[in-house]
Image (tube, rainbow, N blue to C red):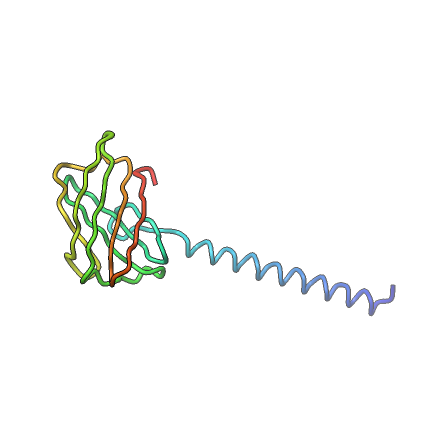
Length: 136
């Protein structure tokens, strides 16, 4: 091989390495976006490009709505319910708008020890549902 051919081979190798580095960095950025960090200390889940954060204090239930970029989504006009599984028993709670991006309701009993919850929200005529596990 001549030096020129070697030079090209090194150049091609460098391009491949640079391309792989860009790919790996891009994958890292995509994964970082997938991290769900609760703003209110609750449990989070993403459904249909929307992020839902469920907080429970005794029998008070709050659901915060945000988009994929964590920007608040208006809760005005939205309705919903949360069905909790607490010690093997179903506890259903209606939630209604209570702030900019918050739906809130009061459960008939304390639900802080729930094992899972199914959230159903209707906003702008579109249904949205998600399941959250207490260990999630």
